[in-house]
Image 1 (cartoon, rainbow, N blue to C red):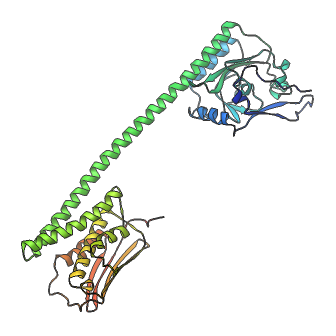
Image 2 (tube, helix red, strand yellow; image 1 turned 30 degrees about the vertical axis):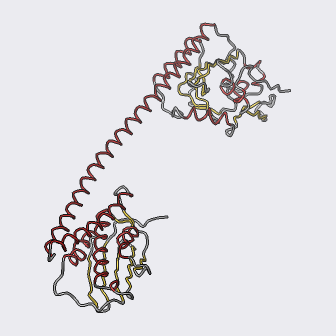
Image 3 (cartoon, rainbow, N blue to C red; image 1 turned 180 degrees about the horizontal axis):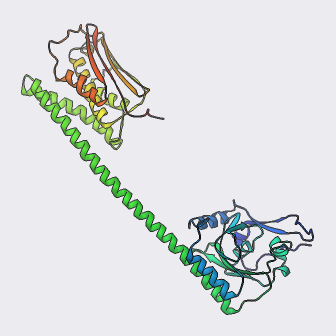
Length: 410
């Protein structure tokens, strides 16, 4: 009969994460192997596994420091095999090994799966006499392992994540000095692991700091660029407005209204970190001062992101159109309507302003700054063309260009 025993000293939570699995053993059939498997859903094992993975050393390439520790353990203890071992939920990975020639093995038949239940150390002088290894193929198979001693690798907060172990194919005992040295080498292995984690954390923080500094420089450069563009636009608006105005008061009011339209667009861009603005928000904010109580300005179009320059330009165009409609066009009476529609398909942005029901339109003898602003300046921001049609039944404006942005997703 197979006897099942546990280590005399273990953390209760960790032991509860194990389940014993009896499997038929080949080739002899004379043993009933007891495999130790960890339940990955167990709370204590989840915490232990997280602590192990935090070091990011599983599957790491071999390093001289860990190899030296394993060789020293082998020499001090006089064993042909030594391992700096990380114990994961389903496997054990060897950071360093002497005499084995492999980097990992399954956990279910391992010695170290028992060792991490110990508070400090597990010594098995002769595994053939230990019922925990009845039928274990590592003991009773061709490997013929008999001796094992493993000091637990523990994190600073006490989580067992592996072992510093030595093995032999014959029974043996370790002296107190050898056991003390095995514990010392286990601490040295953990010191090396902590050092690597500290270096990795330092490097990550330095990388984040460099990235933050790069973002700051990019932001400063971008803000300077945008400020330059905005000031150039303000200068052009002010200069052209005053040139077309018949009096200083007329010029002052026109400049004030146009700059207010720019400010509304800037508010929208500010909320989006100056990266892009939704055309729906830009148009809605610009026509808000002109919208009638019975909502005769009707908007229809998909959410589409515009560049900051396009958003500012379009807000000026809509402001000019809405102001003109309120003074002379469809919004100057009680019956006129304005339909504002746009589409953005196949990277082609089409914007239409259509007035109906207002006074009959008479084409002007000359184009003012507002018309030039709408047709030439704004259209250039979209790499396209703009055209105002002074049809008798109502002014129409069409802008055809590129939005340079993807549609807004919900």
